Image 1 (cartoon, one colour):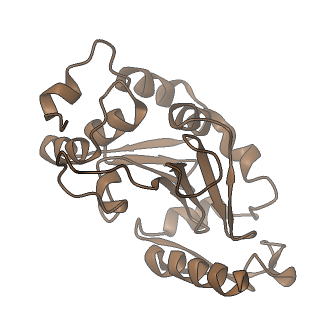
Image 2: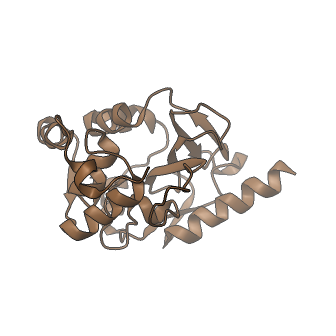
Length: 223
């Protein structure tokens, strides 16, 4: 049954205050992007999750989170070219006949990597956050749920997760990217020549173009 915004918001223990505290207490840079209440409520309604979850809290209360100098973009209600969680996953207004998506995109990184909750369609780990890596062109499970993923990344897990995938001066380069852009790497990271990211050429390109490139590459190599 489709739930109203009021039903999704009216919970005993909303998660947003915990997320705010986590952004304030971490040594990692986290920018909380604003969102209008109308947009947040629309995103929440299309998702049909409550604000007891981190997913619902992010959708309603912020446009998204820019983590670690903007290297990681955790999706929320949408802001300045960063899509909201519903639009990024092609979710329309819900109805009683609506079905859960096969996977739910929840974050992007500047390399074109994607994080998604496996709804069964990825065939990797249902209910868990999985990562599509530009160097392997495949999905792998992080073995954690979405709330744990958000807290881990806010808490500094990006440093370990991206160990070996950064280069001197990456912070300044990230700061120059528009919210709609990512880094195109040449040679690409799934090639032998592209393994050392400090030695490849990097250019800012639209994120949609970057994601499409890796999807095309994955499709070609799978054959």
